[in-house]
Length: 161
Length: 253
Image 1: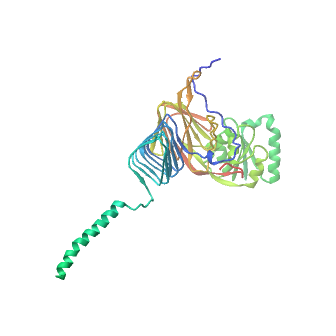
Image 2: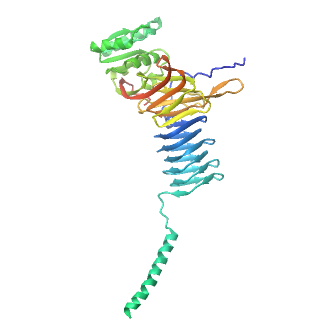
Image 3: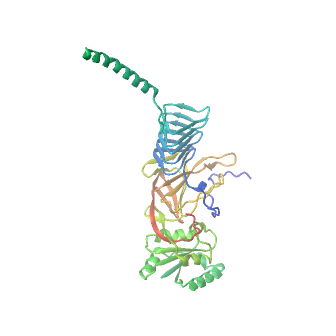
């Protein structure tokens, strides 16, 4: 009645494929929960991490780090959705979304940043492709101009005299 | 000139009618040719070498997934056009290639829509359908860039080329596309099971690759296109655009 099988179940025989191909069928790189990846890990497609990765991670598309996953690496991705833990710098070409269970211990570079309440970020955040007038620099510039005026004025007066 | 390689199982009486119908349809199309019946111990490679020498330009494999994988693993190095007429059950590759099972396959053959397909290369021979390594304590290096191992020790590896891999865990279906310039490796670590199972498979990790090296301290079983061997180190590589194949319009790639 209760079978205690010593051998794990064999993979099921491939079934005929009847459904048309959709984007969900596309193969993406998946790192399972008990899988450990070490080295320069790069992919042209989406990457889904549920296990542990150490080294460098690179993709031009979406990187998803699921809850419980650990990445000890610098990351470069098109977009990133982080629900796990990352120890390293994260550079997203477009959007970085950190969910409530997400932890990033490193610097962040992205164009759009979305952080849910409860998420932990420890590092410098830089938003790329955005030009903001630096107030400090402006202040410095204005003060230096006034100083130079102050310095020039006595010389002119001396020459005039 | 067309050469038709019939699998051994087609000797059975139940296939007589369908084979006669196929032969008639091929004659109607004017593409009938020499029929070679494969026996259990006949070498497909030697047979094909002989036929190519005699002027064969198109080799048509008649049978199922096993026939297709078995023959092409030996003869993929020949520079002829390959075609496939699937008969009977176990025909998942035909569906990926867009070839209907039975007599309708003759229409696809007559249209001669050809494509160059990638095949896999494992320890000095080709494989076209699937390579399977049952759960073993293996370590894998991908494209000389990163290593993959499991915290649980044993892993099962399936490398797909033309034959799709189907996993029922979340009802999701994966289809390996022979034209994507990559092979797909499905890796399933063995984890402790629940109350009624000692061991179970974890959901698969998927890695597209061009070259991988599988190593182990203990010999492990490798099954590729019906051939089983024991190895301690296996190099699996992608042979790009290796075979010229007649495919259907409804193909999955």
